[in-house]
Image (tube, rainbow, N blue to C red; front, side, top):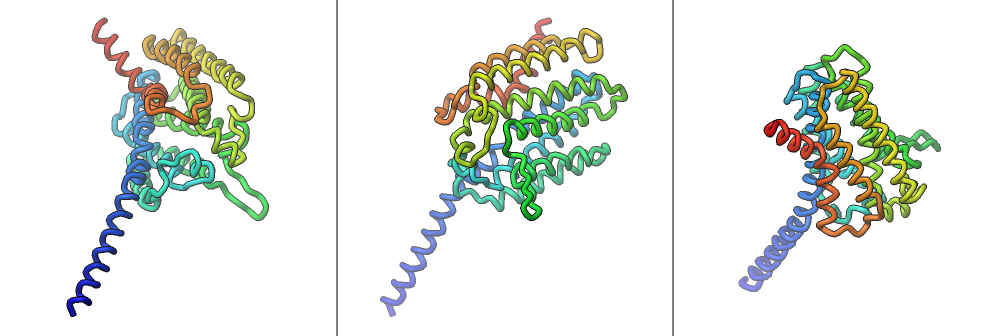
Length: 306
C-alpha cells in the first residue's frame, strides 16, 4: 500500500513538474511573440497622428489608437503564421504558443475594425488583413501559387502601398482636397518601403535559404543603399514642395528631422545585420520604429522653446 502510494506520488509529481517546465519554456517565447509588434503598432498610431498634423485635419485620437491596433494585429498575425525563413531569422520565437497569439491578434483586430467602422473606414481596416494574409501565407489554385513575400522588392512595394493608403485615409478621412492626400500617401509609402527594405538586412540568411530574393539579396548592399537614399530624397522633396505651396501644414521640424534621421539610419542600417548585438538591435528599433515618437518629441521641444 505504501509503495503504491509512493509510486503514485512520484509519478504525479513528475507529471506536474513536466507541465510546469513546459509552461515555463512556452511562456518566454510567447511573451516575446506578443510584444514583438508593440513598438511598430505605437509607431503606426503616431504616424497617423503626424499625418493628421500635416494634413491640418481634426486629430482623432481614437482613430489613431484603432489604427495602431490594426497594425499590431497584422504584424502579430504575420509572426504567428510561421514561415520557413522566420524559423531561421526569428529563433527567439521558437516554442511560442502561436494559437494564443492568433486569438489575441484577432480580438485586437476586431476592436480596431469596430472603431474605424464608425467613421466609414471598415474597408481601410480590412485591407491590411487581406494583404497581410497574402504576405504571410499566400493563395493557391491548382498549380498557381501567389505569395507577396518573395520577388525583388514586390513585398516592400506592397508594404509601402498598403500602409501608405492606411495612414492617409485614416488621417484624411474628412479632407476633400485630393492633392494633399496624394503627397502624404507618397511620403509614407516611400518611407515604409525604405523601412521594410532595411529590415531585410537582418534576415538575409533566412531569406536566401528560403529562396526569397529581397532587394539586398538581389542587388547588393551598396545598390540597395543608393536606391533607398534616392527614394528618401524624392519623398522629402515632394513634402517640402507641398509645404511651400501651402498644401500641407508648415511643419519644418517634422520635415527636417525626418529628412536627416532618415539619411542617417539608411547609411547606418543598410548592411548585413544577421548577428546583431543587443545594442545594435535597440539602435535599429529606436531609429526605425521609434522615429515617429522622436519626431513628436523634438517638435514638442522646439514648440516649447519658440
